[in-house]
Amino acid sequence: MAAYVIAEVTITDPQGFEAYRQMVPATIAKYGGKFLVRGGAMEMLEGNWEPKRLVIIEFESAERAKQWWASEDYREAKELRQRTAQTNLIVIEGA
Image (tube, rainbow, N blue to C red; front, side, top):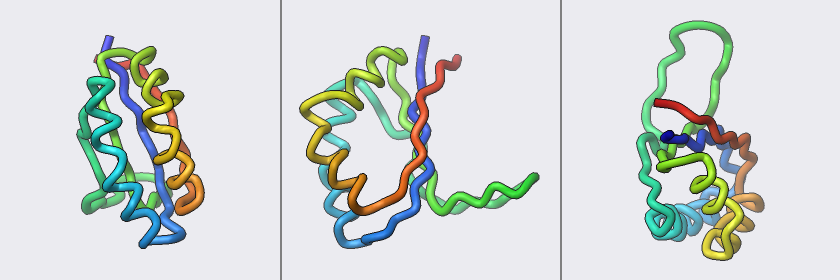
């Protein structure tokens, strides 16, 4: 079953985060993931949720998504993201 990593990101160091943005695509591709949403214009339709930036990445399974997140391939990029942004990150199974 497909799974999606969903990240709500507030960038605190734009220059450092740009380096992260350059590093991460190859790690995602190595684990079979693909970006569905990577930032972009948002418009609130209901409620009071106002994320600064959303990212949605599709993987073939939740297990594969978790392998990517915990991988040595992603370790350096993840540490950089954690220093340059505040992130809420989940994995969810879906259709």
